Image 1: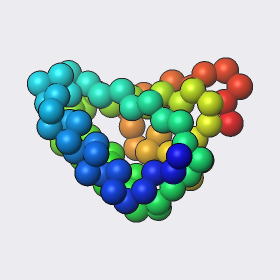
Image 2: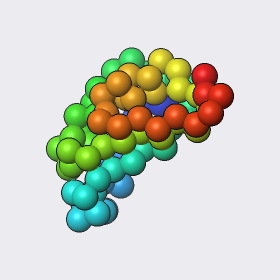
Image 3: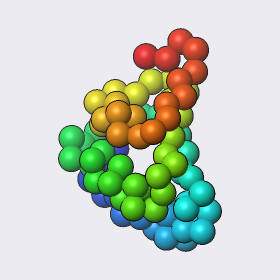
Image 4: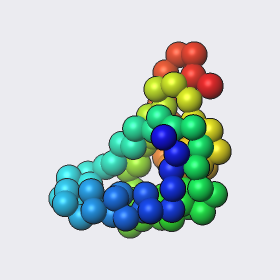
Length: 83
């Protein structure tokens, strides 16, 4: 699955539905083969509006768009043998 520009909308709805929990921190689980070049900065900026505690979990691989998201967060958790 790739991150498209409309992913921003889905992240926004999730954050709005759980804004009390999001204030405590957000962990974003990424498993994707790439995606839009503009969506990552929008998604990171959106999450940063809800919390300063933002971590990315990469279980297998993170290409292009996912790498940009990972670079914009505060903590990165990579599992063994990740690409």
